[in-house]
Image (tube, rainbow, N blue to C red; front, side, top):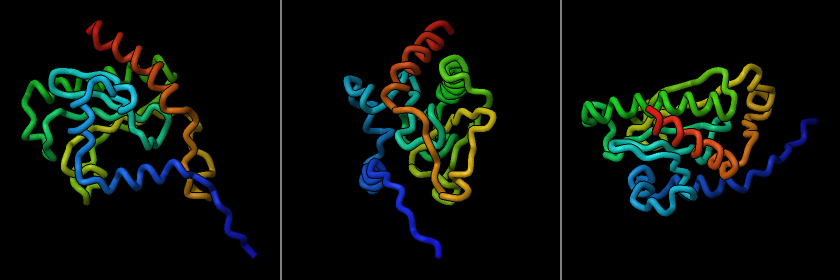
Length: 168
């Protein structure tokens, strides 16, 4: 007889609680630069910013979002689109140098039907990957194992992203 096993993940309650908020964190977090570290904002540009995913698929999962609250690319200026692409490049370099990432999944989930967790505010995901980074946990236990603390990663990635973006 299979016995039900519990995998305790109390930090997920915060996700559930925050996920039901009506405000958009992509709009709210940039309003308080003094809280960038606790809000996990790695770097700010003129049109967009880079933020760590608080509930990552892999360690170092980053997102690039425009300051403008929009769900479509056509509402972002040409300069904004260029800066988003530059930030994607900075994120890849940062993750390669800081975490030794060997590959990346990069994409945007547009609209709720497209899988967007925040359908009203377009954003691009950059998920670092490594050879062998998947194991039996997602398949057998429907659980993803993230190997590093967010604040530890923040310090490492913030410094590197800033260095790369400022040298461009």
